Image (tube, rainbow, N blue to C red):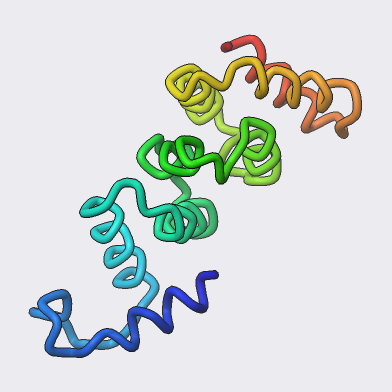
Length: 141
């Protein structure tokens, strides 16, 4: 997904206004910026939301951004269980601040029921680190 994003940006003609005042080289920062602008222009663009989410999880480190998750849930492309699975595998989600933000995101997206089910499963089946994290999230819902 991210390789395709780099390739998509690299294929953008250098005459496009995006390249103005740049060295016209495709970089991780520019790719993230390009797709973030694209999502701002069309908040319902799910493929772009997935790309931005992947950048945020792997590079930016800000995984709890409702702007990225909302179109995925609104379109049915993502579920509460997927959100919890992604969160449980992303170290950025384990900070106290992001546990609280995740709980707020779950509430804002009205996913409490499906997320609670996934978190309860983790409490019973996860390793100790994931169990403790799932309990912390549950306590905030």
